[in-house]
Image (tube, rainbow, N blue to C red; front, side, top):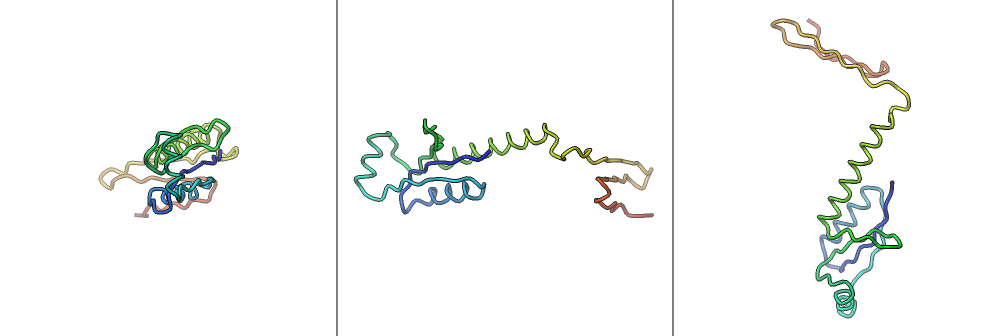
Length: 128
């Protein structure tokens, strides 16, 4: 699932730059509305009621409001967690069985753990 965002920003806003970097790092896209004149800033404040930037929206017909930088972080984290949960529920291995894990206790010598997965992982348990 990939989102596109609309970011209202100013040219000297470090949080705006961080928001754009975060979106890009996550493989998502954004459009930027730069508030680079006092008239643009005044119009933005008047129409939205916001007095700070960045102000971030989902770029949809409804322009769903996300919030500022911290809100964007939370939104993206929630989406990543949701995506991971979906992947786990839909057998991400493409039909392969999950790795088998064997734990053996060896008296006073401790325990050893063997993990095997399609003969690709190597057992690194020290031999005694």
